[in-house]
Length: 72
Image (tube, rainbow, N blue to C red):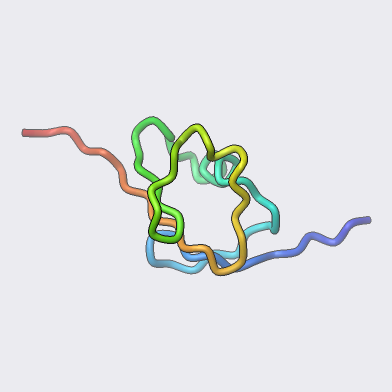
């Protein structure tokens, strides 16, 4: 049986342990974050939402997720 390896990342200022080789899109689904209503920054770079399936999170990555809020 394959051993699951955990890595530490920082998400919105808080540390979290996740499975190694987890894609950004799967991670967002686990958090129940609607990708159409957020902006995603990975290591201080804005991420194209079309690339979230191919981006694998790595040890010590820093993810910032900003929700859009309507108003006036």
